[in-house]
Length: 85
Image (tube, rainbow, N blue to C red; front, side):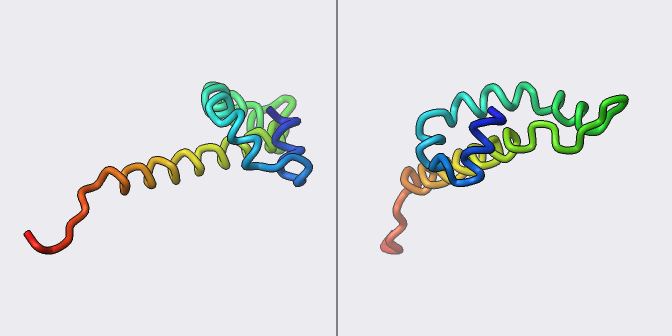
């Protein structure tokens, strides 16, 4: 995930293509490891502020896309109020 995140963040892989192929995998896997990443980033003895930062960036992009798509679907399913009734 870190490698794909880094390549995508640098523009070497198109973000939309990566998310089209792997958004569910990124979200499913990275959510499981998010707390571990936070612990590893903040706790000693081998603290690393940048631990899997690109993977977390990719997770954020995938979650944002998921929220955007959910909102779009919600609007499509909402009744159309014309104001006549």
